[in-house]
Amino acid sequence: MKTARKKRKFEWGYLLLLPGLGYILFFLAGATGMMIAQSFGLFNYTAESRFSLEYWRGILNETFVDDLLYSLKIAVCASLLCICIAYPLALIIKKLPGERTILSLVKIPMFIPALVASLLILNIIDYHGILNIILVRLQIIEEPLRLRNDSWGVAALLIQAWKNIPFMLIIMYSAVEAVRRDVIDAARNLGAGRLAVFTQIIVPLTLPSALVSVILVFIRVFNDYVISKTAGPLYPNTISNLMHVTAYLYNDWPSAACIGCLMVITAVSFVSAYTYLSKKLMQNL
Amino acid sequence: MAEGLSLKNITKRFGNFTALNHVSFDIKPGEFVTLLGPSGCGKTTLLRIIAGFLEPDEGEVWFGDQKMNDVPPHKRNTAMCFQSYALFPHKTVYENIRFGLRMRKVPASQHRALVEEAMAMVNLTGLENRKPYELSGGQQQRVALARSVVVRPNILLFDEPLSNLDAKLREKVRVEIRDLQRKLGITAIYVTHDQSEALAISDTIISMNQGAIIQKSDPRTIYDRPVSKFIADFIGTANLVPCTVTRQQGSLFQVQSPYGMLLAEDKDFPHDSGEYYLCIRPEDVRPVLDGEPAGEDNILEGVVKNSIYMGNTLDLFARVQTEPLRASVWKDYHIEEGTRIRFAVPRSKIRILEG
Ligand SMILES: Nc1ncnc2c1ncn2[C@@H]1O[C@H](COP(=O)(O)OP(=O)(O)OP(=O)(O)O)[C@@H](O)[C@H]1O
Ligand SMILES: [Mg+2]
Image (cartoon, rainbow over all chains, first blue to last red; front, side, top):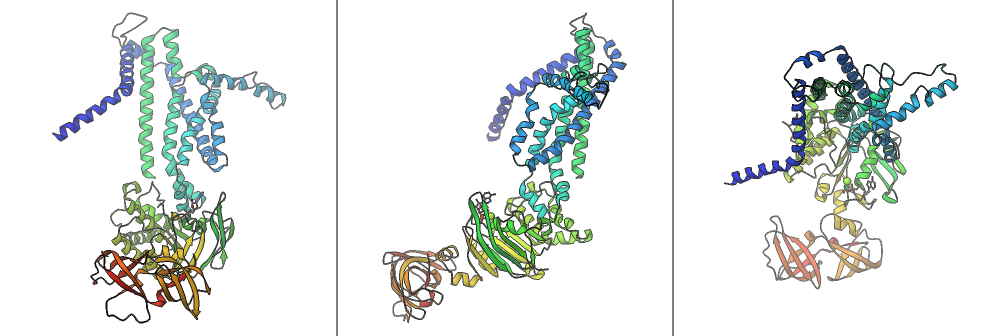
């Protein structure tokens, strides 16, 4: 009797999850289902709906591969650049007086929309932007540098870093702050100098946060549309851009759906592989 | 090697709160010293200054003949057992304890034996591979203890290392700490709230209150001849009542108190007359049965209000005139509540103290 009642209570508990989780699951399952169906030619808005494999056959073309590689490249570079800056920054800020003020200043980019950020920074690095004007006036260079829409994606990378460093910094700062003072004291007391405290205590205790923040930024940049659209190279561009163009410019919704599927698959496999490797790394520490 | 320690005029302020106020003392090499005092009196702060985590605002810390003020913590060769344990959350029990050996470059071949010895000392054998969050509070405390003793430093600093252990284990570990400290000749500073622990373990007890040292002496002296009412009250139990004192001759005083007119023999009391407190330890009070001679002892007559059999003693809560008197007497007495009774207190067992 008692266990039966207990069990029922347990099930009621799950119902509490429904409003939030149900909403997420409904759209996740619905949207993913639709996307998969569309990629096989079903639910086609712009042409006759019928099952077909032709869209999948046509999708793995040169543009797609270039765009995929470009997206991965920018995402990997941006997340590494961010962690290389945010991690030391978090450690330094922790040591400085007035850390709260510094921290709230550094957070500002988080509140500026990506599009605005992108345009603001473009104003600086544009062909006729402030940076080029200054460099030319100082006669450091003769011709203005072409930083915007450059073929490698430097401008996009810089803007991504500017936008994502604060995000990472918040994660890393709370990780650094969570390392208890007396644990560090204990290490010093047992004979650990600065370097040993850093490698033996601070790094192992903050590494999990660093690993998580890297993958979060990776996904944010990998999925980016706005920044690459405004500041990125004209070709290749991100997969999101390709998907958008395919759907709205070429009116090819099924192909766009294929691209969407591949995007999700790439992201999920990347995250899984990364999570697996991080776990291994943490175990070996 | 053991090293003596001297603090000279240490003052530490947090904002405008003075946590330590001109604290000075010397500790001999190999001495076991206990800091005893109520919560918040500055014991942990003092240990942190000795270990080098805190800089004193004034004063000097000396280890042997070396001034340590500017020496960083990792070069001081102290080992501290933290009140908050401060275990490394990402390391196993074994690695926690081994950490100090690695940092101090003890040859790796000796690690296992040393760690296992330390673990056995605190009854932790078998828990090597647990992480700190998989341990109970008392087990974590024992890891902290093992981690500090395993490195065999010059100076060991214990901040209430046994507070979370049960009575039996506490006694066992206490004896082992003492044996190890004697065997290796390490100087130890030990913080505790527990006055019986302090009496049992120490060569010297330093009694503190509000950031200042009140008395520094061996356990017997601090218990039998406390210098102030505060210490008499804090260490052990005491009957403390206000009194008016007049010196009769030599060390003999006439004491006018709520217990009546008493005679006290107190060699340490410096004043000739005035308003002070008298202190009688419960175990110095003896019942005088009808017909028994009392000799020179003071006689206090009262009524037993409560009689509590403690096993090893019989505790009596009596009323003498209007004042309560506590007596701790031989366990085989049968004294009922409500009994009118005479108590004897030897002159030499009455102590006169400043407030
Ligand atoms: N970092 C700090 N900032 C401000 N005040 C502090 C700080 N550290 C300690 N204090 C104060 O200094 C006093 C002494 O603290 P301390 O920790 O040395 O006490 P303690 O004797 O160890 O007490 P307990 O027996 O409770 O551990 C306390 O009143 C405490 O509030
Ligand atoms: Mg303390």
